[in-house]
Length: 333
Ligand SMILES: Nc1nc2c(ncn2[C@@H]2O[C@H](COP(=O)(O)OP(=O)(O)OP(=O)(O)O)[C@@H](O)[C@H]2O)c(=O)[nH]1
Ligand SMILES: [Mg+2]
Image 1 (cartoon, rainbow, N blue to C red):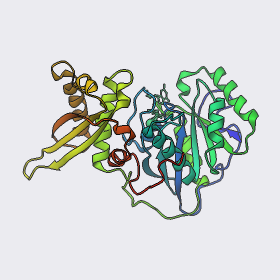
Image 2 (image 1 turned 60 degrees about the vertical axis):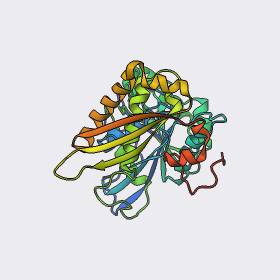
Image 3 (image 1 turned 30 degrees about the horizontal axis):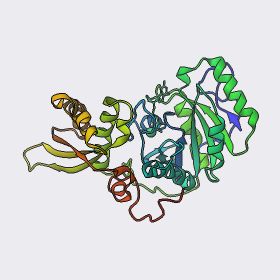
Image 4 (image 1 turned 135 degrees about the horizontal axis):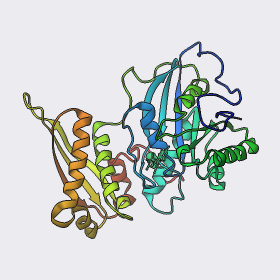
C-alpha cells in the first residue's frame, strides 16, 4: 500500500512512495471499469462530474442522492476509463428502493476492475467502512480520502497514517483528494490505467455515458427537488419524464413534460407549495439548467402525482430506471 501525498504533508502532485503507476505510459490500450463506491455523501458523484468535466450525476448536500449506477466514460493516458458512480452504501432496512440502491453499489463493485472507495477525510476509515470493504468482491481498492479541503494537514496525516498501519493487502493505494476543488484528482487518474486490463474501446470516442436523455432530465429535476425540500420528503419522491421532443423546424423549442411522483396526498401539497410557488421555483431552476445542457429553449410542464408505495413496487422502480426490468433477482441482498 502506498500513500499518494507529499512529504511536506500537503496534498500535491508528488508521490511519497512508489506505486504501480510510476512507470512510463502503458504500451498498449487498456480499458475497464472503475467503481466509485463508499458511504452516502462522501463526494462520489462530485468526483465523477469533475473527471468528466460535465454534470453526469446529480449532487446535493443530502445523503442518498444517487439511486442507481451512473456510468461515465473518458479517455486518459492510453486507456478508456469507464466509471461507475454508485449509490452510497447504507443499512437499507426493509424498503425495496433502499435495497435496490445498495445492491446496485455492490453489483457495480463486483463487475469492476478496480474500486475507488471514498471516505471523508474529516472522518477517515471507520469500522463501518471496513465491514463494507470486506463485502465488496475481489477487485483491488484505491482508498480515496475526499474533502481534504475541509481538514487540517496534521489531522489528515494522522488519518492517512492510521490507514497505512492497517497494511491491508486489498488496499493498493491511498489517495487524498478534493473532488470539489480538483486537488490531486489528476494524480489519482494517472494511477488508474495500470489497474485495467488490455482491452478495446468499449464505448465509441465521444460517448460519455449510457444514460438516456430522459433519465438525465429526470435526475436534474430530482436534484432541484432535493435541494428545495426538507426532511424526509426528498426521499419520498421520484421523477419520470413523459414527453421530451423537439418541435418541428424552424422552431427550436423542445417540449418537456415530467411527473413528480410522491407517495402520499399530503406530500403533493408540500411539493406544489403555496399558490404553486414551490413547483414554480423547482421548474425555473431545472429549466435553466436543462436549457444550458441542451442548448435551446424548453417549454416545461411539471405535474405532481400520488403513486402510493411507489418505492416498494418493483415495476415502478424498473420504470424509473432504478432496476433492470429483466433482473428477476432483486431481493438478493
Ligand atoms: N468541501 C467539500 N465538499 C465536497 C467535496 N466533494 C463533495 N462535496 C460535497 O459533499 C456533498 C455530497 O456530494 P455528492 O457528490 O452528492 O456525494 P455522494 O457520495 O455522491 O452522495 P450519495 O449519492 O448520496 O451517496 C455535496 O454537498 C458536495 O458539494 C470536497 O472535495 N470538498
Ligand atoms: Mg452520488
